[in-house]
Image 1 (cartoon, helix red, strand yellow):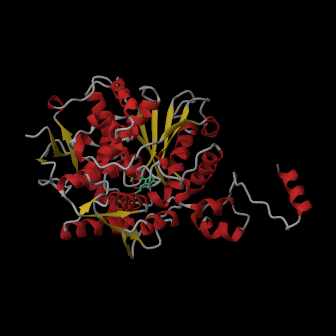
Image 2 (cartoon, rainbow, N blue to C red):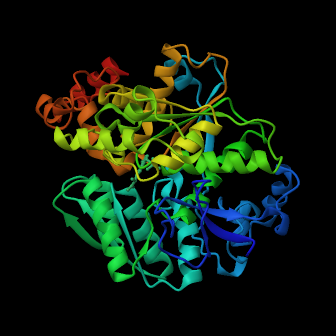
Image 3 (cartoon, rainbow, N blue to C red):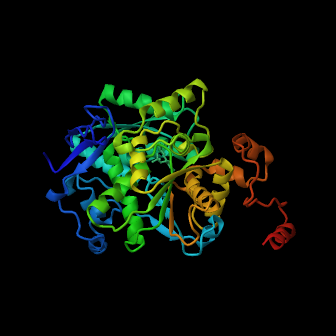
Length: 463
Ligand code: F0G
């Protein structure tokens, strides 16, 4: 067998297939696939500090990339095949103001700002890996279903590299303007289907199979290889110390799956002495994972999570016509494709799941913004979730916590402007129907007549 291959995540099945396969489902049982490595035949680093040598080699695009400078930990492609657009130049910022809001001691909260990626979200970490694989297999067209960020990332990568033509599926009226603008401006074929993300996700898999289009959703295990690098950069920024908690919003559950795999491998390779605890935060209006994990007790169970629990839950959603609904449109998802991998991640990393309301999300978002970083609503779920976990006494005030800010503030200006608006009608239209009642941390614009004295008076009153 090759040193790199694809393998079913269910240990009882463990069917394998070659790197060149693009079906992205287990050929035997239909389950999810991992990219698997025979580390004995590869050259993983001896210590994480070895990566620091890459810092002096920034003229090399592979060492500049925040994903590929860790390429020895995702060695599925020869270096000359790697396709990078300079993704992953992101920062881990100590955020004491926000720590106060969350209830943590100064110096204990860090925000990993993935909004700094070329397309403005963490997806670029995965897209560079998917594109590298697509290049290996000679794909000419790529497709995804999206709540907006995967499609933006795909559109950017297609236009920047010219490797493939982008076909994106979005739920009609379901994605924010910033993200739709990206898909259109970067020239993607944009298919708006009458339905939501969960519908689009089912359709894109059928279409990709029928037309032989390369799928870049996070069901593609190569994408998740790239997203492991978010954790490598967190460790790098903490000088290779493992935080106590990593808190991440949960939608399709790709990120948490990738983070779990990163830590499982680092532990196996003896590169870390312990792993952090992982907390996944759902929006209350799209809380499948919270329900399954915390209420129905669904667990990994050595690769055999109870299918009847999952099936029963989804039948219940259908019977009651429940669709995902949250202001955090990026995570407005009720049928996460990476459910099983996420369970595995939580099993290995002492994981827990919480849900937060749209009110909690927008208040946390305003605090993150006032603290210096702009994020979109879904990202703020991580901070709202950390606060919830502090209030519940699960996280201690002195623990070191990293919240992932998955996407940039400018992705969704509508939600932000409505929160800070002086106009009750705008507030009600955008937020009222989501159950948001107050804008406790609103920064309202001041209305003044076009008169110098009045303007000066207003500035003196308010500043
Ligand atoms: N945060 C943002 C900003 C996202 O765009 C997404 C997912 C998530 C969090 C959730 O991440 O799926 O790995 O659990 N957006 C996908 C999309 C679904 O289509 O852009 P996940």
